[in-house]
Length: 83
Image (cartoon, rainbow, N blue to C red; front, side, top):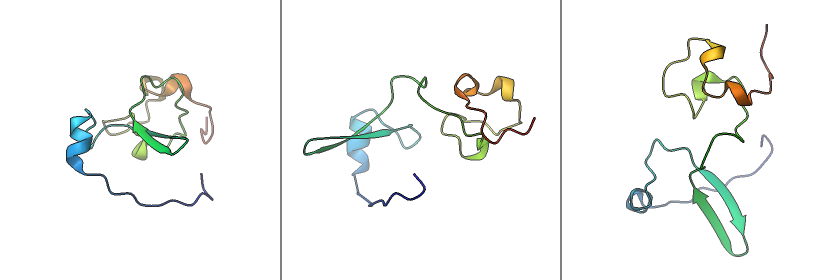
């Protein structure tokens, strides 16, 4: 995604809250003919950990570099891990 262009789209907070999405929720974006869809993933099985624990959307607590206890450990591709 490093070279992708982005646009900013304003969505009223009330719409997110009505949909059950909070400001802390993980969201995913998809596109279909004539629609852009924002939703919350059903599971984290497709998430690939990049070991950027400070910015991990799955980690609500500060990283203590306990990789075995990381919530995305099962999906880690090993990039950036210096073992």
